[in-house]
Length: 406
Image (cartoon, rainbow, N blue to C red; front, side, top):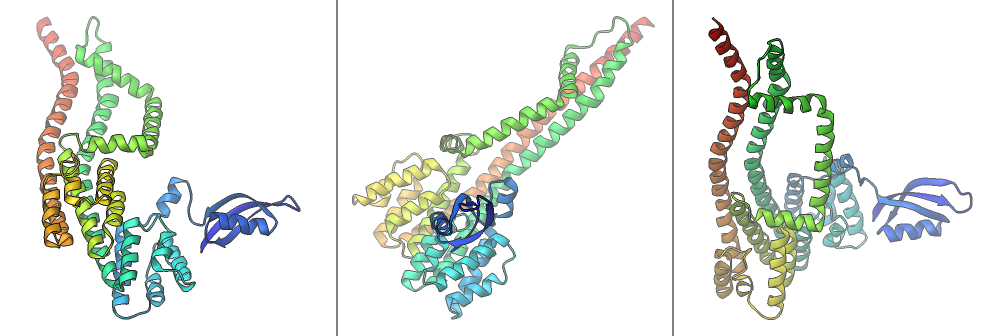
């Protein structure tokens, strides 16, 4: 059962009412309100909102999910009944959104629902991979083992994503510092050079100084326009990036732009192998494993390749043959999967593939850092050269003029 906040109009009095109602889904909530003589105007899940602040507040981090999963696995392994284990874990959760979700899961399980079905009602917190592993664990009677595998898989995925983000944060910080320094020089130091020259008859500023002074004038007098335009561009770019077309374009660029393309390719291979191996080890059927992994891999292009391979697997083709030659799969993946298929150790081979590519991601991050650092130094040096030249050339010019007059 979910708790919904609704706004409705009383059909008898015409008054607006805002309150809460518990129901299985939005349609059930609307029917309950209609049966009470109310006309629903707006219905939404309690604690969920459309604002950025609400989304941030309701966010459940990977670390919080890992802790929840591992604690629940330990309690079930110790012999506690599922509901008691969930209640014990709920008492230790500090995140409000997760705590409320677990509370609803407990009510659903007590009402006869399976844990997987109860978790499926909270798609913003529990992914399809999570739900598939829980369902496989419940079906095989090894829920504690499935949860342990799930926690390990989440930790590995979170660790590798954190490394990639860390590699991209350094150049971003350098660029932001550079922009701040250049802005300060343009708005504070350069105008003083112009004031100095204005008092000298016949003095002419060098071309580079005049160009930067024009930029300085725009920044000083129209900074608010720049901020508004930048905010609009960022806002619409983010909205476009969330559309299917934008997501497809960005995912394609990730796989093609140097030097990050090799990094992302290896990241997706590691994620595919780690998720797929975990699902297979938990007893999830091959087709279900592939469709679930396609959703979890995090790239539309790679997901399309996985779904294409799924159709071939349905037709009786081996997975290794289905992905061999696909441009979005690195050559080692189908070769290792073929060995796993022939030896009956598919989950073990997929685990080895994941381990290999996770190490490769580490190496690729180090390689990118090695490339980016000198490139950034050159860019910073060139920008500093231009700004310093714009400031010093007029001064040297004045000094030269004075010497000639003497």
